[in-house]
Image (cartoon, rainbow, N blue to C red):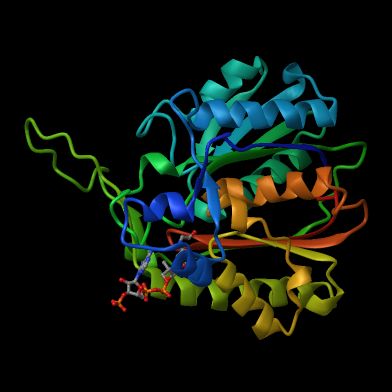
Length: 324
Ligand code: UT7
């Protein structure tokens, strides 16, 4: 199977660190030195998760030369669905694209969501080689962060990325995959407002994302290092033999620390966090699409996708681009 096409969409409005420093007790110097982020794209009123997902998906379908009718499944990985629980954002995308022969559902594995969704799509195509799957990672994090909390709001941005997966004559799975979770860390990144909360009459809670940065940072470095090593060991190669690593863009300092632990130079890692911030489930598909369109990712490149997120979840996928 292979990734037949990629697409992405970042909303046009750009918010810089200096813009944030006008209303928050922070600075470009602090944010850049602690995160590697300089600016992020923020959705305006006419964009939301399903709309951005649809724009990215249209690009991916065009690049793959696949019609909406050929899609058998639409999976949207997101932590910021249009509706709080249902309907699934994937159903809105399915309708907007005209994927009238497709099932559609959302997948919630936070920032690791795209890797989980790609793995589901890949397995589904292996079972139904005559059908194609649309896998999207899309987020409107700007609508769930507390813009008065300098420890969280500086990190996040909005956007969407998408891929189309199909059998292309050969439905044998090629990629090596590792998915994992450690629910004991669930309190480190969370957003309340679900069925845990007994609603009080007349009270409409507006829950924000809450984050304990340090333990997440440490978990991320330890886990991404282990996943990449583990996947490489499984195919008897050293991590240095990888052409590129697409690590979840949560914090540039996390990726630098992973590189140091692995003894790898930073140019092994595709980086776009400086201008995107952390776009959660959109981060890896946006990076893939940018690398494809800029010519940085070429057929046959051996790459590793690796991510982590709230849950805590983690996952990695090692592939020879574009074969999965
Ligand atoms: O996709 C997964 C999502 N989450 C993550 O990936 C988060 C991972 N963690 C991180 O990226 C980092 O832990 C942060 C960037 C969130 C924070 O960086 P840190 O180096 O861990 O800083 P800290 O939380 O230990 O805070 C150090 C100081 C504190 O001041 P005091 O108590 O030492 O006086 C904070 O109040 O920095 C202060 N601080 C800030 N100062 C200026 C926190 N945020 C800011 C800010 N501007 N924006």
